[in-house]
Image (cartoon, rainbow, N blue to C red; front, side, top):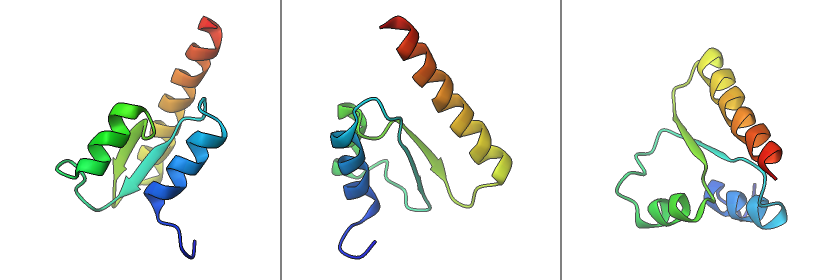
Length: 76
């Protein structure tokens, strides 16, 4: 992604479709990062998963986010 980092990509995705669920995967500790905190509060980042990640953990996180997405659709 030349000229675009992961956080910028998440913003673009959410601006395109606010219903999309986003998962930030990184080895970086974002907990003390102000921009990360802001994006979590604004709902740009819906979930995080720490690297290294196993395929089973990643699949479970995707299932969890898909379930939240489906529940939100049923409420509208």
